[in-house]
Image 1 (tube, one colour):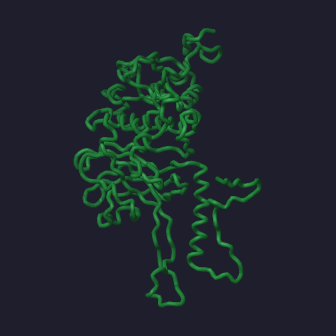
Image 2 (cartoon, rainbow, N blue to C red):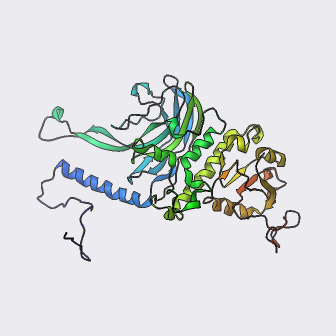
Length: 415
């Protein structure tokens, strides 16, 4: 079979961006202008594809309560920017409160913004009862105003729209319980198990044990949604409800990802994929958000415990307002060492290095390091506990002229 090979310096028009060639005397039509606009969108989307998909900034979600008409639930989304898998930029210009319903009749002037539904995105409405939902942002196109026309009567024009607004819209995707079989709504660790179902098996310590036999990393829960989660959508948060409109939690960081290029086709490539650091960052933020929601008066965590409320912990995290007795109670049943003192300058490198480390299994006998920051040990803010996966290098080694005698540790590695 004959094969054609392009030569060096030979243009390859297939897949190229086609723009209108303007010249004096050319008859221009509306479709020509439409083609020019589409070429501009295609050029913009190629920049987005080069950057990767995810959330660039903002777009944080908070449950607003049952404030929508009909006593239905609503969520507030902050202003921000995201890029979808098609490379399209999605921008929400102001904080917006959205009723978790599609029915236009249920909206009122009290809701700051209303985004029309786009054909094909309408399923996934919230219904009363127990359920887990994914909130997404997607592009939408809205017609606006009427343009002046020539050549036919004003009232007879069907295409005289003045502008097409490239807007955004939100929708809910219901996640069936069959996609998270090991998590129960009634369990205290439900939120944590669902979050790590979304982070995927690639964050566990056993994922790289068989590099040739392991599957490439992926966002397992989102991947399992298949075509129900469209390329045009960017995940923003998980919302869980029990009973009739009873809000259980809103978890942003379990499905939110920073903008990075995906490389899902190779296990070996996954070892250096930049997106893995973004997942580790999300694991850290997810834990800190959940810990804040569990904290009671004065930051007390009791009766919450690591094994009771978390099937997995991030590779490193921060527990505020815990004294040694509180920390012992929180990590009850786990193998911990410390707390040891570390210099304040070591905290940020420890957290950043943890982003590519595996999650901590709370039922594992493996060691977890506990640290206190030497410079704040006796300050009010000194009741901060930093924990780290035992696979991370020990940070408490005594070092001359850095860790002084009253805040130093016995070296584990010798001198």
